[in-house]
Picture 1 (cartoon, rainbow, N blue to C red):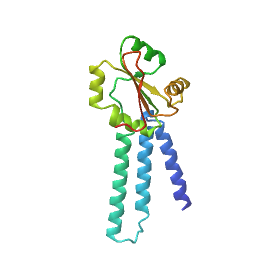
Picture 2: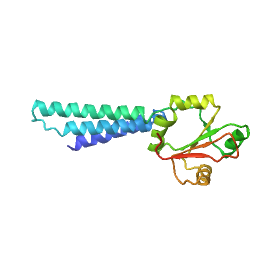
Picture 3: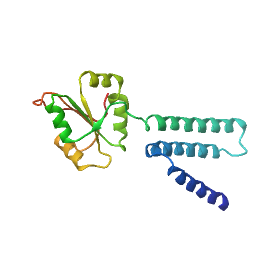
Picture 4: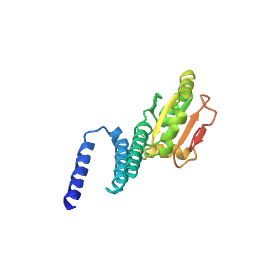
Length: 186
């Protein structure tokens, strides 16, 4: 039993080593998949060796299904890459675009924000919105608050918000106020 446990630690060390070889964008999806595989192995391993074929088959089907669903979730939603032509956010970029008479759309987001990721995939980075952005010469800016930038925090506070997700759209007319959409978008 001790040998088995020591080999488990060796396998964990191998996982840590392998994480050094993958791109940072794959860290969270890969870790999520590994947790799904761990759960599947746990489920299958809980089935006694003396269990009948029905119980064994149920455990294997259930474990495999869980691992597949978690893997699908990990590498579709968590690894999603936007097709929107985002530019980095700065107050100067907003002011410059508005001075040029352009509408500006700013997505205040962070890598750790699941609601932000959901908004991006299901409501913001859609073909319909991308077409509207292209047709109307909208400037899309991405305010990535992953590192809790003081500049982005100040911009959020100026809009009357203290947290994300927030989608702000400044009309081309500099006299008009920003249109604010917060929380889960549809």
